[in-house]
Image 1 (cartoon, rainbow, N blue to C red):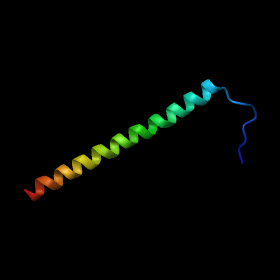
Image 2 (image 1 turned 60 degrees about the horizontal axis):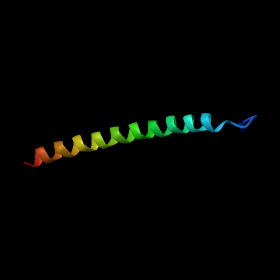
Image 3 (image 1 turned 180 degrees about the vertical axis):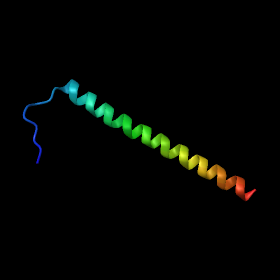
Image 4 (image 1 turned 180 degrees about the horizontal axis):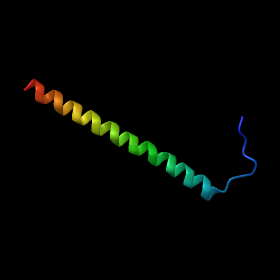
Length: 47
């Protein structure tokens, strides 16, 4: 199992976390956009 050799600074930790969280935000936006387009298409087919 990978174990860090030294303590990572708060700044570096926060940078990594922010990058990781930003990726999640981007994916969530994509998912919402896809869901909206699918719902819009379904509503158009019904009418």
